[in-house]
Length: 183
Image (cartoon, rainbow, N blue to C red; front, side, top):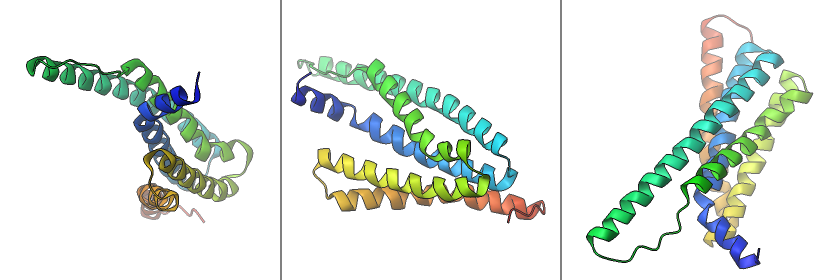
């Protein structure tokens, strides 16, 4: 495949790549942080993480496929009503596959430390590694959107980790409510 062809394919899949990575990084980090703090069990964290990635990854892939297909059909009908030629290269199957693949890959970042380290060490590694990858996704997407790389990366981290903070706060609140000492 030629370089321009690869770049065009990436640009056509940009929404699914960024959305899949960001959503998975944030939701997996938030859920696993909350579960790790609340349960203090590596087994429960890994089991939850794998179930989360499988179920949510398939859901996101299906949602991307269905929404892309609906958008394609709607656009086609609008062009028919306006009697204009319709030359749209949307590929709902590719959208679903890209979304699912990048959702799974993104979710492995916050989950991976739990396979190798204790809960406390994994927590310590999971959060910054996810922040670094979020920043890199923002920087990478800026190369295609012609935005400032630093601004794009920083925006991705700040917005995304604000959302992930909710999992941590819920775990702390529930642990406090039930009198569970989580350290």
